[in-house]
Image (cartoon, rainbow, N blue to C red; front, side, top):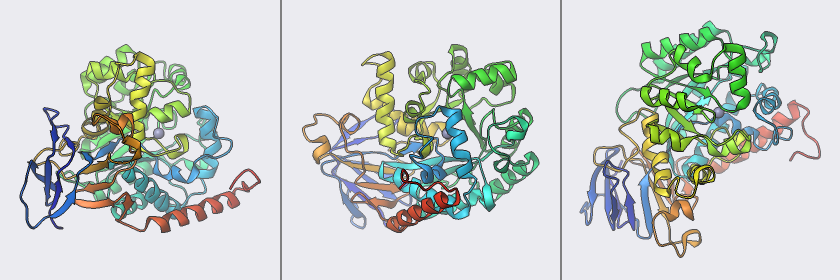
Length: 455
Ligand code: ZN
């Protein structure tokens, strides 16, 4: 892999410890690592990427997704429902998925993230119908080239036991734990620069038992991997916790070992002051998913209060069925706007939102080797061309959130170019898009869902 010299950037937003912003600077990438930063770097053997008219940032980090859901965007019946009704509409469709659906939908979701500046993403796959495996998405990520933190999700309480999902989508708890061990042993890489790290992730407190939550935490600690789930997403979620467990979600999490720097929870829209203190003290992370929270009417997460208290907060696009877009730069903009709706125009700056999208997201995923442009950190870089229509007339680099563009010009992961001239170059994206369309037709036909309202 050749060295890459990013040359003459309008500005480099480093997100390093001093939050330096360097004008007219170069960045040299060597062996998957950031080797040098400064003005006028000389590297005769390097491939030169001219960055004049561009803002260079660390690659964005996505801390919550369900890649498989790119196959169920804008499904009629789920478009206007609240969380639980939305899930009940979609479960029967997801029950028809198999390995190819998991693979192709992951390719699409990962490529969409890449075009929006994302170099590292987690994924939460919690259903495994018809022979699907976590490995299907890991293969897709290897092809697309993003740094990948897939989590082995699970559901074990089906309709016949009073749960939400149909019985066909739930698994036996012993088999779940066994498969967690299998995928950790096969794929988890704890080293600096790892391209794949596995997490353990029962879907939510309302779709698995208390025993599985506790056992999952014990297993994750034994294996040295992280824990992830959905928590305190909306009012229904809080009511369920109070009724079934006799406590709020924060208490439930703490009782079962689900707090600490090796845990991050998606949403947390309804955390109260005590729970925010608990998360801050224990350094429990939060994946904030503003577009999904808007789409499902869940509310505005108290991100200002969480950040002020010291809770590590990253961003998540969430599954494409509840967003329905997967643009991470769009998510950063939305997080800034929502905090302003809740707390006033000075509640969150564009720079802070970008910090949450990069450095803080890497912290949430336990990656101190990523998320900043600093010598020795991994070479995960997004290059934004601000010479086009979206940002024409801008006075400051904050334009990349306040104005545009919404697509990167170039994206580099571990020193490898994934996007060049705003096109994915690591694999055949057009072919994947065609196959994705064919799979949607197949799912519609299988479920008798094709009518004059569907495409
Ligand atoms: Zn989710």
